[in-house]
Length: 129
Image (cartoon, rainbow, N blue to C red; front, side, top):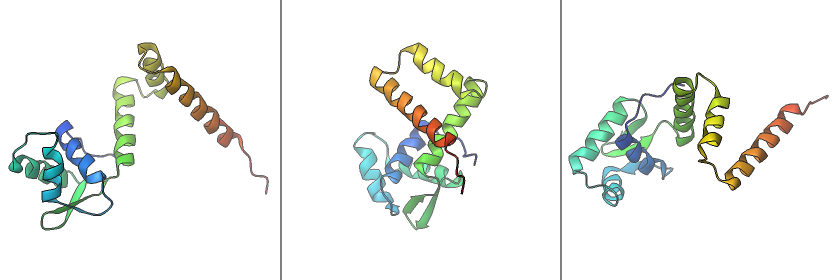
């Protein structure tokens, strides 16, 4: 599922909305964003309207919003777009770039190795029933 492009500021609003299972009132969204941003109340509302128009959130009641797109869906979509755009549709090139850049700690490399091994074991399991 392709997700409309979301700006960095809109992503900050989405992160607040994703924190709750139930719909979030505008006042609560503004309050949480005020802790990290010096945005005017109208700015938050504009971001919410833009996100609604892009189809990633919906207004469930007047002034209450909930995510239509989950954080996981958005992350997968953004990763896929990055891989396609920057790494010629090769996830292998993305991982190689991360390794070559030194961005991954030894712990992260170990975690990745474990994930790959686990994924390969699941793929190799055959059900003979």
